[in-house]
Image 1: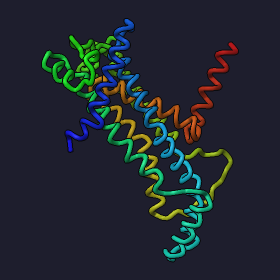
Image 2: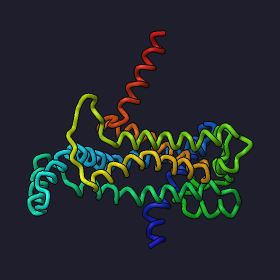
Image 3: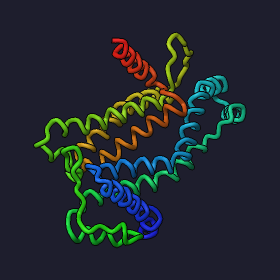
Image 4: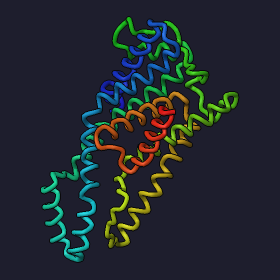
Length: 278
């Protein structure tokens, strides 16, 4: 199974990474390896775009019908059969398929996991033996490397973790902070926008209260966790994750808008306009 995963996912990803590196190195672009990681991440995001778009749109539709679901559950409390009938009717009326977001996610996960594994190995290739292992999985001779790549990027070694890079103190703080901030923005965007002045009647039960509390706590806990992981993992993986998240923010915004993060985007726009006027 592991060998099959390598053939289908890891090896093609490795070849694509090396191809980008070779391209940037041939053009004499500085920080070729770091840029190759960014380019590879964007390429994977573009390949997965149709699946991610389907998942985002499905989640957005589910958010729109959520108030109606609560109303149905409240109206037919204690009558599970009638609840299911009304819920299915609601889904048909709004063109919602609750399972539509699962398949795209299942397709994406192996690719994302493969990309993570490839980069985790790539940033730590620092010997002739590691280089030989890398060259064995490359499809063409022109892709093979004759020396270990330079893993420095903007003054940071991509194989090092911020927790070990005390010499670059400002950057070791900036990397996990940026990672957490990007993840917070994306998580906020995935929540439904709260329209000012719109009062929604809520008669939520304990389950609804728990779900709301869990969602609110996750909004802050998950970015903090991701930020902590980026503090302990190689900088190269944080570079990949941040690129992945920024692309996700752009995709979310283009497809369904800023969601609950709309006030932040409006503030940024107003600040940009005021600076431009000045």
